[in-house]
Image (tube, rainbow, N blue to C red):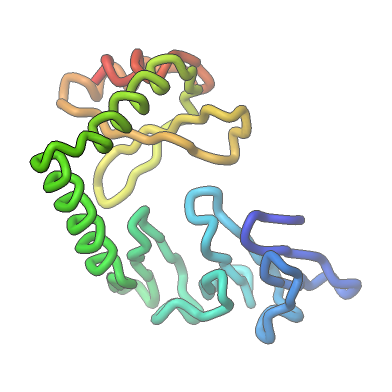
Length: 195
């Protein structure tokens, strides 16, 4: 089974082998009970040594802090994660604050360039909006992250990947979400107008 960031193959004895995308087998990945890469967090591989306990590794083969033999690991969009172990939950930032700070600096530079008369950012956003208003998106279903309902959409025809996501803007929009059929297709602009 080949994934974008990992190569997972089955050994003759029924165990699995985990390698990076170039085919180099990780030292810990020579013989594991099972390995899985989620479509929602493709930069991480979940490795099972038993049926119920998981350890999570990143693309470089480094174990995520605190995930050794966990009952569950929920990885959020920003790379932070929550580990459930022995009935306790623990949150790990995993550099998310630093990434948000960098994004804020980039956004500030973009705003500064607009103030100075350079309008490349606004041109980009106008082109992006125009493209999105012409692009059909297929509704894949809901996912709950940090207590919020997230709607997932596909635009490339591969239902294992999510290209767009959104959150219902208002409580009244939550009712509309319940009426949407899985694999319903509309333009991205039309989805956005729903709230």
